[in-house]
Length: 128
Image 1 (cartoon, one colour):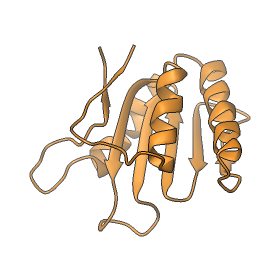
Image 2 (cartoon, rainbow, N blue to C red):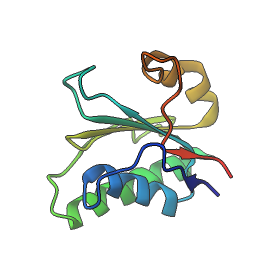
Image 3 (cartoon, rainbow, N blue to C red):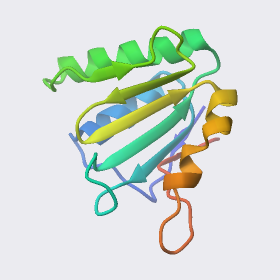
């Protein structure tokens, strides 16, 4: 089960914290949080995670959307649910990508976004 790494901390009460907590509760695998502030205007964070199957990916997306609504956030836009190989959840300040492992390794979004100027990967959650 993933453990939260304190190298990048989510602000308490933020959408970012809610997303990371819910993904941890749903046993998402290899959760990575990439700070986008100053790099892109699309969001402040991009969170990338894997599920073991299309069923788990779809369930994680549904639960995250429900949790965001219960927290009073606007309804997130969700793309990719029918196939659930890659589901995109736009939660405003946080964009979440949920993948099956094979699809994630093919697109490798972390490589495109995950390396800062110092060349080190920015990870919020690692594997235990």
